[in-house]
Structure formats: C-alpha cells, structure tokens
Length: 237
Ligand SMILES: NC(=O)c1ccc[n+]([C@@H]2O[C@H](COP(=O)([O-])OP(=O)(O)OC[C@H]3O[C@@H](n4cnc5c(N)ncnc54)[C@H](OP(=O)(O)O)[C@@H]3O)[C@@H](O)[C@H]2O)c1
Image (cartoon, rainbow, N blue to C red):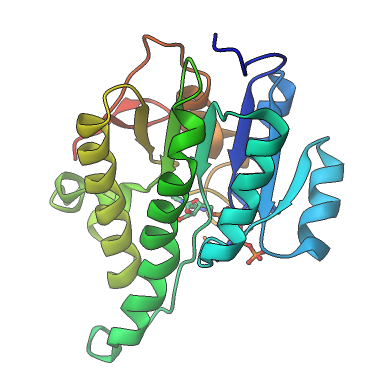
C-alpha cells in the first residue's frame, strides 16, 4: 500500500446514472469501495449517487475539460485511484447497412472508444499510485471476431455496424494497453445481453450483466490482465 492509500479502495465508474453503470456502483459500494459515480448530468447523476451511497462526479466522457476536472477532484481528495470502470456507452443509430454514414460511425466511436481512451489517459497518473490498479473496459460479445464467425452465437447476427466496430476497437485497445502497461491490470468485460435502456430492455438481469465487471474490479494483485471474459469465463477474441 502506498502512502496515499489510507481508507477504502477508490473506484470511478463512468456513465453510471442508470443501467449497468449504476448497478456496478451499487455492488462496489456493497464491497466497501468509495465509489465516484460519473454522469454527464447532475440532474440524473446526483439522485442516482444518493440512492446507492456513492459520490456524484460530473463527467462527460466526450469532454477533455469535464474529465480533467473530475480526475483533479479525485487527485485532490485521495491522491490515487484503484479501479476505473470505463462503462459510458451509446448504442448509436440502427439503420439499413447502406444508410450508415461517417457521422454515425464518428459519433459512436467518440463516446465508446475515444471516451475510454480519454479516461485511461487522464487516470493513469492516479492509477499508478495504487498498489493494485485495475481498469475494466466494458465491452460486448459483439466486439469479438471469433463470436461473430460462430453462426450458433447471437453475436453473429445481432448488433449494428458502428456499435460492433466500437466494441472490437475496445478489445484491441484493452489487449494492447495490458501488454504495454504490465503494472496495471486492464481487462475487457462482456456483459451478455442485459435488460437496460440500451438493449431495449431485452436480456438477462442487471445483476447477471454486471458479474464480469465486478469480477475484474475485485481482482487481487495476482488477478488477470489482457483478458476478455463474460460471467462464465474467458471468451475468444
Ligand atoms: N445492455 C446490454 O445488453 C449491454 C451488453 C454489452 C455491453 N453493454 C455496454 O454496457 C455499457 C452500459 O450500457 P447500458 O446497457 O447500461 O446502457 P444505458 O442504460 O443506456 O446507460 C448508458 C449510460 O452511459 C451514459 N453516457 C452516454 N454517453 C455519455 C457521455 N458522453 N458521458 C458520460 N456518460 C455517458 C448514459 O448517460 P445519460 O443518461 O446521460 O444518457 C448512461 O448513464 C455500455 O458501454 C454498453 O455498450 C451493454
């Protein structure tokens, strides 16, 4: 434990005013973490944080200023960060294949991929002060080439072009960064289809959907890095 690590472990979850993010915050609070619930709107974020005894932090993953201010606040309060959960994501539009535009792709990548990189870059100095730094990138089975080519799997049929491309990019970002930053444990979680607004309320429970995220967030110093898993275990990339 470093000099700055006194008290409970510190976690930051992005896009956490509802859905997967909010449930992840609730479960980490239950595990004794001090959790910062990142949300772009105070109107939605503050009551969500109050409901799970977390600390609201205004955080729009598409804004450098917003992310820098949020990270500066954690720096001032704690001097380190133990767990970053990159969760904020959008589904993007659903169109006929010939109707997808460059703008559709840019919009989805800006939140789902560029936003994750922005958070990792901004949080790295704080993560490096933790004795067990972990990054959980919320991915999807839709980002797996192997699952896409398995015609028995729903991933071979479901999802949109920009969204699946964004999750594939998250997977490669995870694998590369984990290898290049061996002192930080960086993993990608597939949730399986989970009943939230993003999935049109289709799929398994939000408890099931957050299992893989919580598993990676609670891992000890000997835990995995550079892996991709759902609640049942490792997945093929
Ligand atoms: N549900 C599934 O079946 C499923 C499966 C695999 C992976 N995932 C992934 O799980 C993550 C969470 O999705 P969900 O199902 O919980 O969806 P959701 O209910 O739609 O929640 C998405 C969250 O992200 C936030 N968000 C969007 N853009 C943001 C931005 N620029 N800055 C900060 N927050 C932002 C939203 O905030 P607002 O309320 O302000 O919009 C909301 O809190 C996503 O990465 C998604 O791709 C979901």
